[in-house]
Image (cartoon, rainbow, N blue to C red; front, side, top):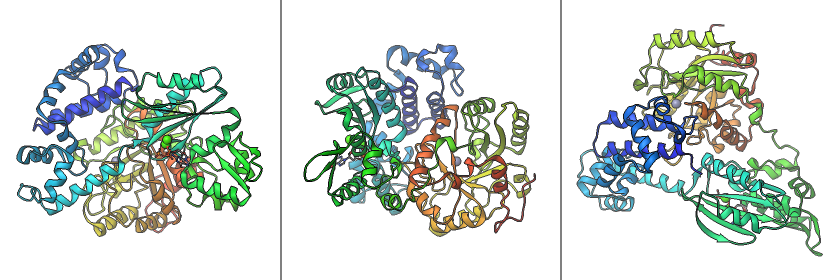
Length: 583
Ligand code: DGT
Ligand code: CA
Ligand code: CA
Ligand code: ZN
């Protein structure tokens, strides 16, 4: 079930890690890392490409293409095996700890023979790291914090990984005869940012054919339980999938029950009790007589409890029942509401595809506007210059209008420097249609400095959107330690939008931060931050998180018409609205 592209990506990424950890050439490691990402994001199945086809993938040169061919033919990549043999697997795990890079991991292994996370924790508690060069009490604290984060994300998988597998299985099971309904439920249907296990529900009179097909799916590596009501399997990546088959008549009650969350279900069950009813996965029953009242659809179940249907993304017991009772459920933003993407990259910086390809892919998705926002020069490794940026602008302008229904905006992703200033002077910035500004360095300045830094960016009349505002990488890097309430207030006051970065590794802002920010009247932008055409598909996860933050379309600037968006981008009628962008 894993795409060959992802297999190859993981292998090349591992190779890059191993090169770094063995003190190898950093340039070489970067080349492999780039190729890994390029292959992971490539539209065609690599296992169907010959050497010429492979060489057409950006960042893939002869030597990498040869290694990939070898792997696809034989199932192993000798270069990887060779370095693997030199380094225990546990040392690679050390590298995965946030804040602990390959160099430190190698030092720990060579000097203290530490080759696993538990060994590292022991060594810290015994203060054995103190004598190493470059390790102080602060480093220890950071490492322990990093280990906590790693554990907190535990065995949960990113929502997109779970979604791809779930959709394949739903398609397989839906094709079987006797399948009346089939859907995924649980945290995946609620679009949580990570998923513990996938829950799939089928409505059918006879369950055996579904259970049997399920355990025989090519991605199944372990059968945990095989029953008539519930069967659980594990995939190669360790993800558990539960399949439940319910009688067709119980579909609505089953879907409501297995969608959860548990906390939401406790509320609905309590409401049932107050109505002298009993709610289970089989239906809503009279408490006394046991007579079934409704069970076929979710709508019926909610209606009989005196509630409108509640969208799954709201079912977290965060006030949705009370809002529903008052008739005040938000009219949630949907993927169809999104008219444009305001944060995307091309191969002019670290994107994988040329401008024309990105734009064509966006047009195919039916977007009405699309902003190209490559990295600004202070992110030194991207080697941006004024001339390159202006030349790109010419290309964007020339391309604008070629896709009948979609307009192009030229923008940039600025770097918010340690003092809050950005890459270019105001005059140069005025030439852009839209500026995203993000923190890409100096993550640990301390709370006051970081807060001031973000406030300064908001006050900048040319900054329209704060990109991935907390810079967290799920399971890898913690959110910035910053006074978010001050930032939210500043965004509202200055007409600066907060990004909801849709990349499944980021989903930044998170749902909880969105809930807090919206109380300040902040506007949001749900952006993909696409570095390849395939990444445009991440939009759905950004919209999922926006829904979990209770957002309506009106609060999301990229659902607006282009004229309304352009007025917002001028930052007029706000505290900093003095300097206008050129028309
Ligand atoms: P996850 O898998 O940790 O990401 O979160 P969920 O919400 O998918 O949780 P899961 O898979 O344990 O259970 C699926 C749904 O089943 C859950 O959202 C609500 C429903 N459920 C209701 N009551 C219970 C209960 O007592 N035990 C379990 N296991 N599930 C329950
Ligand atoms: Ca689940
Ligand atoms: Ca489950
Ligand atoms: Zn960025």
